[in-house]
Image 1 (cartoon, one colour):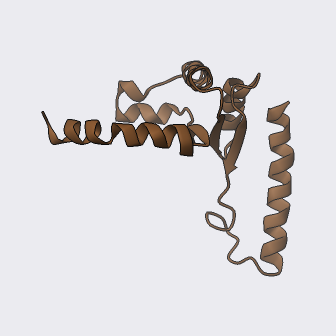
Image 2 (cartoon, helix red, strand yellow):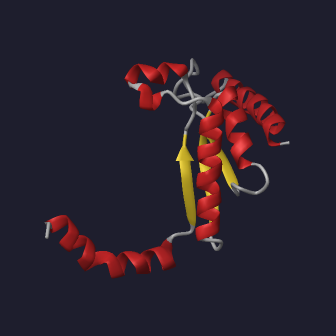
Length: 137
């Protein structure tokens, strides 16, 4: 028996206890989106939007069915078409909470948070919030 299997068997009761006691939510995805450019890595990466939606919808339903006591959460990339797709698999209570990873000030031309930089960050965030409200409806 491999060391990996032995360790798994040894720690399985502890893992079961942790899951039943310390897990507060299930995260089903982080910044998942479809792009035809992914096909350059091989055919298994060539996924159309409908397949991506069906897969993530099924994943959310599975998590919900297996554990009704915890929230289902996800983090989306800050990209309109990805958010539209995520809204498709998140509807009807399939995902309890969705966050959007924003990199304002980190991956933008805002060099600091003081003065004009802070105003620009606030303006960008307010516009994004208004844009995301359209996907949630």
